[in-house]
Image (cartoon, rainbow, N blue to C red; front, side, top):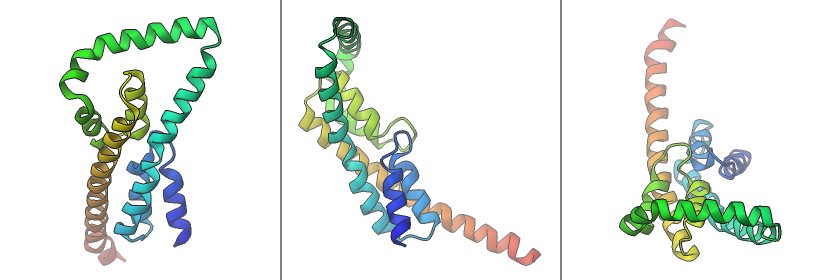
Length: 163
């Protein structure tokens, strides 16, 4: 069972998959839903600080190149101006809700990247992303447990009598 939790935890570090894939995978392999939620949630919570560290470090490093500085400044400024009104309106609650949507491309990686691009405060962004991760984790755990039970019921109803 340790391997199941380890693999689920590793899945949570993969961009686009994160806990949206880690939790259902572990539950499908018989892992305890609450322990799965805790392990995958903690793993996915670690993503945001790592993404910010990565972005700040490499951005600072790449700013040495003039072409990168010109390109990144133009992109970042255009994005910030374009989305300024929405950020003023929704702010950190918007980041939390965005991350909480249990769909691909709405996880901690994308939330951290968006917050960094928009120049939002790192600590508050990490807290908002963490809240979103917890909400998404709860929703996915409930959906996964319910889905497993539904498939089990259908399997027992349809497949077993045929054998």
